[in-house]
Image (cartoon, rainbow, N blue to C red; front, side, top):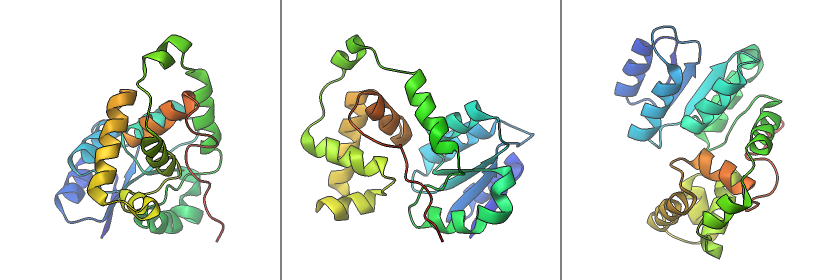
Length: 195
């Protein structure tokens, strides 16, 4: 079941149930929705979270994706995109409203890595770079394993090594930091597929 959440109570119920995905509105009034997304991602990293937010709340969009949301839609896109975005997120995709890719690119540009910071990062092996590139395309761990012909546990080992070397603790931070270091090219997540 996909559980919509408009209060933290709803979100806690969804978290306790065997939900396959959670759709959370960033306008939750009884607690911090970004903190909730972080908690879900930490306790159930395979449970996809789709965030809904108003336009103009760019900082919260970035914070929510950094916190572990696998997709984000502007509230005014709900009628046209919610159903297909839930399908996409369940299929391992990274649905975003039009314009969000630009927001993430601008975030990367504003937070450039100095050459001193770049030297401080331990270099990634070619295999770690391949895993990071797959993550940057929005692939699930299972997709990465199939694509690279390795086991799921090996993917997890590479991801832990990447997080350690880059000094990050989430997929989004690894991808964004990898872009700032020049390890990845293009947008951080694929554009939505035309239907």
